[in-house]
Structures are given as structure tokens and as C-alpha cells.
Image (tube, rainbow over all chains, first blue to last red; front, side):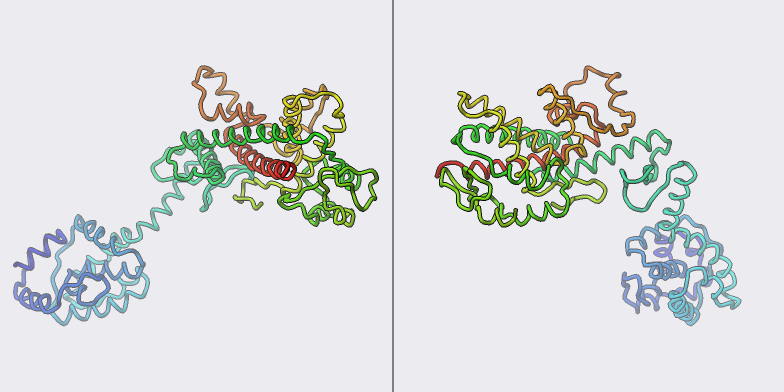
Length: 319
Length: 156
């Protein structure tokens, strides 16, 4: 197979096919065939296999810790970049460059153009490479640039503040929205998007609350499920109140009047410290044996066994 | 109960709080109507249900939730008592403006939800969802309390 054509196809570089000094091609073929092609981008032999420019990109890549898939993407991206005349170095020169680049890879991206060897054969390459590194580094840092551009976009086009986190509401005076790339950024649509995200956040909250709602896809069905749940709860309250009414009507609930008189008015759900403390001490968990009794006197220790009695000793102690 | 979100607060008091309030309301009921008069079970059931809702609204933090205020206001109106809460600042709701635009929409899920949750008629949709979450929690608490009561009091 013709190596030059292979390279041309891969990189789309014209001058690769126009290899003038064809005596290099034999050396190159030796080089390439002796080294088994590996596709782990960080290996030295893989670098040697590819043209110099792509090898440098790879080094940039491993430096900037982007994923492996980007390499192939950028290999495709590099192809439209036209290069000047490229001459392939001799064997030793290539090894030198590769070694140097592997050393340089640990440094920052911008340094490479300054550190390329300035031998005569490489001068053209030096000129080509900085131009290429700039474009390449732009592509390599595209992710970071995209973020910066996004942020600049947002800052320029919208007057709202942006945060890195997701939408925060309710506590802050104005809404923090993250405008995604390619979406309209005028005030109305931003406000609408904020509102929609608010609603979706609460919907998620409700989904967690209602059992069996996280399996359902689609907000309409989830809402239906929520409505069913609320209706069932209300029906349960009604059922239980009927059952309570059917229970022996001679139950006297005087005990809690004691509580009321002791603790003052319990108007709100927020108790002050000590009354709530008393409540917590009261072992009323689960009401396994809630027992009510008829009482003559508040301070009486034992109650007549009318229907049932509440744990009177404990209650007396607490109060 | 721990709140499930940092920004949206749907804390609900412990079961004891609901229990206390419910028992108080029940005792008020029984002291009001001595059981000499023949009360049909239905009538008592309805009273107990009202008491349950009012006590739930009180236990959930009387005026700090829209639905509880609506419930308490509704109950007070039935008893011909006028209760006024400190009015909280209300921003112009989108809902009002949309109502004027299209009144003939088929009853959507959100509209049904508004009918179910007390006080849901004039709330923004996001606020409605918050209130629904809190309402569901309180309702389930109340159901637990009543279930335990009924289990304890029913003849063994």
C-alpha cells in the first residue's frame, strides 16, 4: 500500500502526497512498519506513525486531558486546514522532534511554537506550525472557549445574572438562569424558561412524594397520579372520620383539655421549646394503646376503667 | 421530617403535633354537643371531618401556608366567625392574566389540582405545586393519626 496516499487520505493534506524527496518514503515505511500501529494516543510509536502535525495535536490533547474521542474528531477537523509546504524530516530528526514534543507535552500549549528546533529544514515547519497550533489549540480548547463564549453571550445579551448551578429561586430577589447555547435570550423567553424550570423542579418534588410516580414518563400522567393521590387521601380522611363517629360515643376526651390548660394555647404548629419538649417526652408513639378515661379530678392518679385509660402516671409526671 | 429540597421548604411537624390538635378539636366537639341529643352518625361524621381539617390546618402552621389559611378561613366563614390573617404581599399572578384570555379551556390537570387543594384558585402554578406537596404531607400525617386513634379505640 502506498503510505503517502494513506497519509493523504487521513489528513487530507495536499503536500503529503507531493512528497518531493521520495527517498524519505522508504525510511518512513520502515519506520511505520516496524512499529505496530497502536491507537492509544499517548504512545510514542503511535505518534511516529502519524504525520507530525497530528502528533502534536495529540500531545496537546493528552496535555489538556480531553477524552479520546476528541482526537478522532479533531483529526477530522484538521483536514480542512491547508498547510504550506511540508517536508518530512529524516529519521533522526523525526525522533528528535517526537522526543522533544513528548517532553513539551507536559508544558502548556502555547509554548510549543517557541520551542521547536530551528534547524534549516524545520524552518518552514516552524512557520506552519505556529499557525497550525493556534488553530489547533483553538480547536482543542474549543470546549473551554465554548464555555467562555457562552458566558460572554449571556452577559452581552441578557441583563440577568447567571450562576453555574442550576436555577435557584425563592430566596433571591431575582432569578438566576443559565441560558443554553442556541436558545432565545430575550427577556420574555428567559422569564418563561425560568418559570418552566421552577415548575419542573416542583414537579420532581411532588413525584418523589407520591408513591409510584417516578416510573411514569410525562408530566400530564404524573399530575393525574398526584391528583388521584390527593383525592384518595381526602377520601381516607372521610372514611376514618365516619369510623370515629361510629365508635363508642361515650368516650371522653378530657385528657387533652388538661394538656391545653397546662401548655397554654396551641394555636400554631410552632411550639416554644419547653412545651414541645414535654410533648416529645410523652410516649404517644403509634398510639398502640391510647386509652381515654373519664376523670373526676385532674390530679387523680387512677382512673375508673370506663372504656380505656391513658397511661396516667406518665402523663401526670410530665404535667 | 427533613425537607427534601434546599430552596423549597416542605417541612411538616411531627405526628404529635397533629395528634394534639386533633384531640383538642375532638374534645371541643364533645363538650359542645353533649351526647344526650340523638346525633346521627352522619352528622357526627361530618363534624369530625371538619374538625379534622381544621386541626390539620392548625397543626401545619396556621397562617404560614396558603392552603391552611384558606381552610381556616372557610371554616370560620361557616361558623359565621370572621377571621382575618395578616395579608401577605402578593405579586401579580400570571394566572389571573391567563384566565382572562382563555376561559374555555378543558379542565386541565392543574385546574383540577386547584379545585382539590384549598385556596388553590388564585395561586401561581409553581406555588400551587409547593402547596400541594405540603398539603399531601399533612394529609398523610392526619390520616396516620386518625388511623391510630380508630385502631386504639375500636373494640378489641
